[in-house]
Length: 250
Image (cartoon, rainbow, N blue to C red; front, side, top):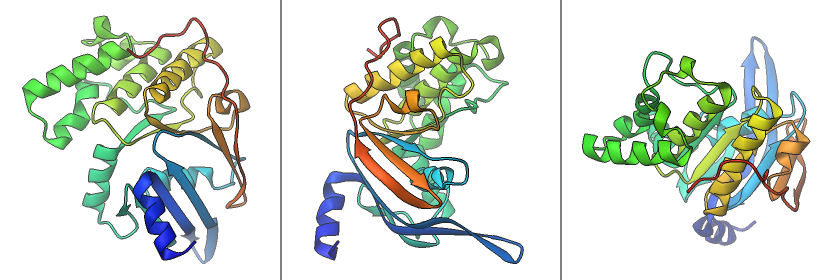
C-alpha cells in the first residue's frame, strides 16, 4: 500500500493496522505474538476476530483497544497514530473512543450500577447534570432503569453484562470492543446480549467482537481468523439473525 493510498484509507476508516508486530520478552526468550499483521476496519463494520489459544487474538484485541502498543508497524485510530502515544494519551483514547465489554464484566463491586456507568464520564470531565442525563439514558437503553441503584452483586450475570454495555456506550465511542462477551453466560442470556450488540450495529456503531465461539462470531458481517500471529483468513459473511425474543436498544 502506498503512503498516499494509506492516508486516503485512514480518512474513511475507524482503524488501520499496518505490518504490526508484537514481541514479548520472557527472560532470555522472545515471544512473537503478532508477526506483521495488517488490518483495516471501516466505520460501521461488525467484525469478529477468532483464533485458537496462542493465535495472537488477545494481543490484537489489546492493540485495537490501546491497552498495548506495537513493537513495530503502525496503528491509526481515526487518523491518529497510536503507537507513539504516552500512557496518559492512551488512557484518553480508551476513555473517549473505545467502549469495552469484557467477559468478566469489570464492574466496581462497591458502588451502584448508576455509578459504574457514570465513571467514564467523570474521567472525561462531563458536568454532573449532563452525566445524570447520559447515564439514565444508557441504563434505560439496556432495560435496567429499575436496577440503577443496585450493586453488581445484586444482579444476574446477564444484567451485569448489560451494565457493562451501558458503560461502554456513555462516551459515544468510535468502537465497541467486546471480548468474549457471552463467555460467562448461559445460552439464552448470551443470545440476549448478542441481540443488544446486533441492535447497536444496526444503529451505526462499529463492533469488534473477539470470540472463540462460531455461533457468536456468526452475528458479525466479517470474520478475521488468526493463527500463529498472522491473519489466516479475512472473509465477509451473512450475519445470523438476532434472537426474536431478545431485548433491543431504543
